[in-house]
Length: 516
Ligand code: FRU
View: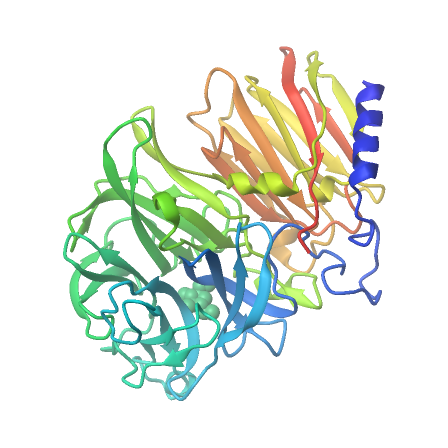
């Protein structure tokens, strides 16, 4: 056993990039960009200031674009811009100048981007097709004046693959007939109708619009007034087809973020599995489904135009319940890891599965593994320098285990599988800085796991300095949560709370390289 940790320690030493994060740093220390306390090392964060939703996710000419809700003046929400970063592999990101600024129509709220391949908009040429961004204008003057029609939809185009943008002079392209929450257009090309489809949320439901040229839009249908979770306003819709794994059956998946009303409080993203005939979406789903049971995966949407029809999802790793109070100073908020979505049929239920992209391999340092066996009510302690920049992975068929990550300050993050109660628990109530928000400080999150396999399944945990992402059975069950330990967790106590032997096979911890 000792040998395993020595080998791992040596592997770590040889791969260490010492210019990166240090273990214990006080918030007051003047540190370089991306080295500040709590700064994520393998998740996207803006170089500085406030960020929320991912926007305009589109792949074009070898580049994955990530635009995002951005306020460049402060670390709290304010007049919204679209910040911009690009990546070739969804691992390393390059920051670009701000793409869209507020104008006389209002702030630039969330939306999407498409490659207008046939130049239907006339903004470019077929040889140099325009990128077109479709977003919500939020007219704060109208809002303050007590109007209801202050959210409209606008468009802008870029002929240099997203570097510079020109707003359309005919904006707004979708006006508002008096719906207070009328926003977050997701546009995609629709082969069935040979036109563009726009999804828009309108308070408590989804509207579907259609256009030949991205400029003239007509409403064609609605969905959801009486379906799904309605604990809060509907936001950030997305919809796409997926083949049910292992079959030829195609279903459509609709994502709807709601705030508040998520199962563990505040904001969260529900999904519906159904059918789309080109104009109308229908689903006979009765239960409420969530893409992620953790508190910190919101407003997530998928990329347009990815090769091989892959569905790649990114969410905002925060929650409106406390997003503006989290204990960071230079920047605020991160994105989830990019995740591949797939649709499975498990015990006769459709399940949307999300799992990190394989390209993450680029930054995973090899680690050695061992098989761990623990008798009833026994535990085992491990130490490791970089839990807050690591991947932990094992296979088990156990229905009960507890992982307690902790540090010398007595801060603990507990992850507990309780097969008897059919739930997984994430307890961050004593995980580090928690008192910035009353609910965060009490936060114990649960995820029902009714269809956990009886046989062997994988548990994979990706931990950064201020987040943990847990994928059970390759993304069948997922939890994402922010954490703010004052010091890296360096100890892990594995316990067997059950009365049968606990076996964790090929238990592997790998350091992850910083992407900055
Ligand atoms: C979701 C959201 C969107 C809106 C944006 C404003 O987090 O509220 O509905 O467009 O944030 O920043």
